[in-house]
Image (cartoon, rainbow, N blue to C red):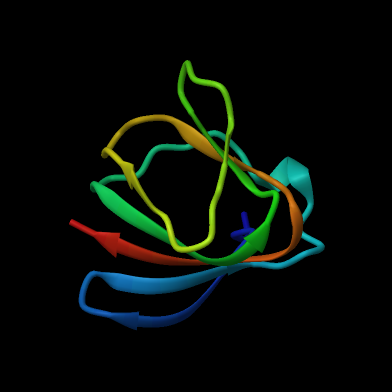
Length: 89
């Protein structure tokens, strides 16, 4: 399976991840990560993050979101591309 995103750059425990405006929504699946993450939204409009057993929350530019390891979550497509800075802990 090909990832629905591109990693644009990486440093130690930090990466830039881009989801293109034309990503197929069916590729944005529920998943779990192996480590805790802090996600900072650099760009994107009306994209949402949904955590397990919670309602979707609109991603806000500049805000940091915490995702604990092994917790199911998914993205919901918005408009334009979504650019995230991801810091693994």
